[in-house]
Image (cartoon, rainbow, N blue to C red; front, side):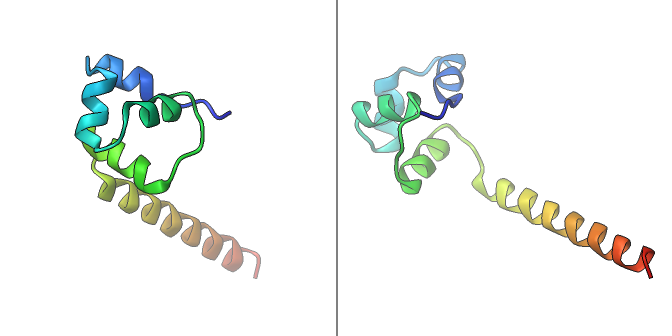
Amino acid sequence: MAANRLKEIRERRMISKVELARKAGISPNTLDRVEKGLPCRMETKRKILLSLGFDLSKKIRFSHMIENIKSEIYKFHKTDSI
């Protein structure tokens, strides 16, 4: 069972489990299972993150940035060894 910080984040924002489940459009039981680290669909994770106010587009841009950095490092090492 994978640990996650969902419960910690929810409690820090002083949101009840029932309130977050309602905002995310999922059942409180589903939220409970996710908080315990049990598997769930990607769509469920997306709903929870959006209802907590996370901007998912920033994550995409960040991972794109990491790929660009990896690519630049690869190019640097490739030209450095020639």
